[in-house]
Image (cartoon, rainbow, N blue to C red; front, side, top):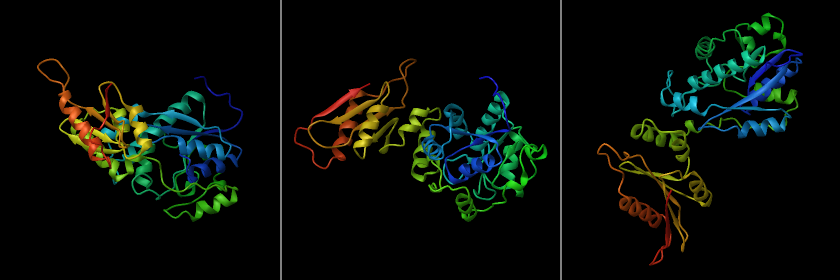
Length: 319
C-alpha cells in the first residue's frame, strides 16, 4: 500500500471498541490529530464490538486479520499466560508490531493505544509496557493518552506533534476518570468493560488446553469449533454436540472434509459433529473405523434428545 498523503499529524490508534480506545481517539482528535482506529481480529476475537463502537462514534475503522500469527503465539507464548489461556503480553506485542509496520509503510507519525496504567494486572503495568515498547522496536513511538502524564515523554510530545497538557494521568482499575472524560466528550453510549477474547473464558480455555495436549498442531478451524456445543473426546475423536438451534446450524457450517455430521430427522434433538484427529492412511497407519464413528454419533444424538422414537431417523453425512 502506498504511503499516506499527510496534511496534518497522523496517529494509528489500536481500537478495541471499549471506552478506553474510544477516548484515546477523542483525545487526539481534540488536538486536531488525524487519528485512524485500527482493530485486529483472529480465531479468538472478532472486530464486531469495535465495528459497532466505530459506527456509533462516526469513525472509519480499519480491520486487520492476524489469525495465523496470533494462533502461533497462543500455542507458544514467550511471556506466559493470564488466568486462562490468554497470552496477553505476547498478544499486545504482536498487535503493536503489526501497527508499527503499518506506521512505517503508510506514513503515520506515531501509534496510540487506550491502555491505562495498572488497569490490567498482566499487560498494563510499567514493566509489561516497557517490554512491549522495547521488543517491538518502537520505544518512544507509542503514546498512551489516558496515562501519558504518568509515563515517559514520547517522540510525538518531544517534537511538538502532541500537546502533553491535553493528555491525562489515569491509572488503576477504577473507571471514574474514564466516565468523567466520556461526559466531557459527549459519549453517551458507553460500552461495558471487558474484552471479547474467548481465551479468557475458563471453560473454553479448558477445552483448548485439552485440544493442544491431544493435537499440538491443531488449526484455527479446530479452535473455532470448540466455541460451540458440548465437547467430548473418545480416543482421537472429538464429538461436538449442539445445545440449541443456532449451534445446530453453526456445526453444519463448520463441518469440513472428513467430518461426520449427525442430524435427527423425525424427532427434536441435537446435531452432532465428529472430527477425527487420528492418523491418515499410509505407512501402516489406519483411519478411524467408520462403524465406531457412526455408533458414537448416533449414541450422542439419542443421549441428548428428550424423546427418541422407537425407530429414530438420523441423517448421517461424511463430508
